Length: 49
Image 1 (cartoon, one colour):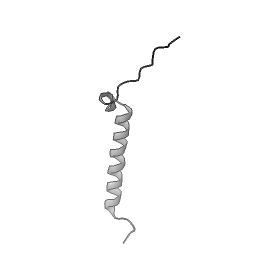
Image 2 (image 1 turned 120 degrees about the vertical axis):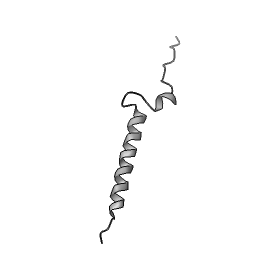
Image 3 (image 1 turned 30 degrees about the horizontal axis):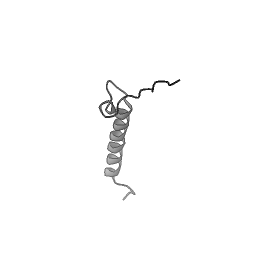
Image 4 (image 1 turned 90 degrees about the vertical axis):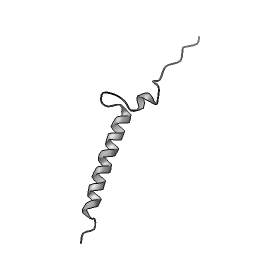
């Protein structure tokens, strides 16, 4: 009997892969960004003299 069962490693790997996909999607790596429809792009304010 080991310290961890095989299910632990399976769920750890699935959670790691799912989290990595979520982070990459939010960062906008790929063809489109998940955050693109939620957060508008930043715009600089006009300079006032």
